[in-house]
Length: 401
Image (cartoon, rainbow, N blue to C red; front, side, top):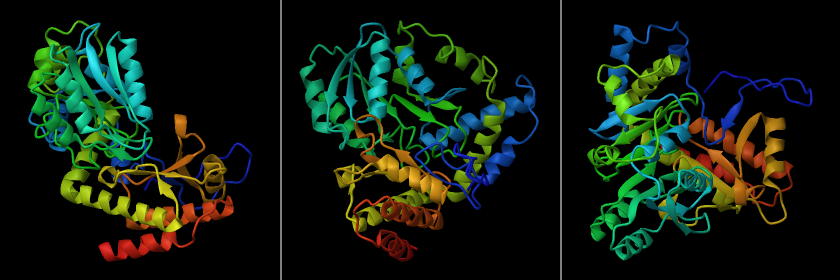
C-alpha cells in the first residue's frame, strides 16, 4: 500500500494518523516497488537505454494481454486508447453495435457518436453485461454486414459487472459476421483472466491505473491482424493516435513523440511484480478478495448491483444502500472518521450505490480492514444492515487461505 497519509481536509480538521485506505476502483494503490522505480532521473528517449526499455515493455505487455500481436502504448488515460481504437479502424458513417451496460460503456457510445459513427445501441438495466444471445441475433439480422464493429466493456467499473467475452466471441463466430471485436479491459487487465488472442479480440483497450498498479497516464491498444488490415482503409482523422506512426518508431523501441518516461520505468517494475507473483496467482488473489467482499455484502443483508453471479467482478463490488438512504453520506463518514475512500455511485446510480475496489496491490488483510471500515460506516450512517459482514469475510478468507 502507498505510504500516503490522509490529505488535509477542506474543513481544516487535523491530519489523521495511519494509512489512507484507497478502496476506490482506480486509481489503485501504487506499490513501493513501483514508486521507487519511478523515482529516478529521466533518460534520453532517443538513446539506446530507452530503446531497450521500450522493446522490453512491448514484450511484457503481450504477456499480460496474452497476445502475440502488437501492443501500442500511449501517454494518455484509458479514454485516449478508446479513441485510438476507433480512429484507426473505422470511417465516418460506419455502423457499430454497442451496449449501454454501465457508465463507462455509455461514455464509449458518446465518443463513437461524436466521431460520426452510427451506433446501434442495446440498453439494459446496468445490472447485467451484454447478452451473447442478443449479439448473435443482431449480427444474424445484419445480412448486409453494415455493422463494422462490436464494442464491449469487459469489466464495468461503475457497477461491478463482467461481460462474458468468450461467449460473445462464440456468438459472433456462429453468425460468421466479419465485424471487428473491440473490448475495454481497463479495470480487468492484470486483475482478471483476459485472453486477447484466444478470445478473438481485434482491439483491446487498457489503462495503467488499475490492475497494473501505476498512476493514471498510460493506455494501451492490443491489435489483431484484422484490425491492422482495417486501419489501412479507415478514414477517420488521426495523428497522435495513429498506429502506423507508432509502428514506425516502436520497432526500434522508440516513440514518435516524447513518451511518459517515468511512467514507463514504473511499468517495467509493475510487469516484473506480475511475473514474480504469476498471473494465475494474481487472478486467484483477486477472485478471493472479490468473493470475500461479496460474502460481507450478503451477511450485511445488502444487495450487489451485479444481478448475475456469472458476471460478478473480481476487481470491484458495487453495493446498493436501502431505499431512502444516501450512499454518499455514508462514504463521507467513512472518509472523515476512518480515512478510507470508497467509490461513488455514477450517473443513474448516484447516491444509491457505493463501490469497494479490490484490485491491484491489495491483499487479504487490506480487504479485511476495508470491510471492517465499511461496516463501521454503515452503522454510523444509520443504514439498516445486519452486523457481522466483516467477520463473515474474515472467516471466508481464513478458509480460503
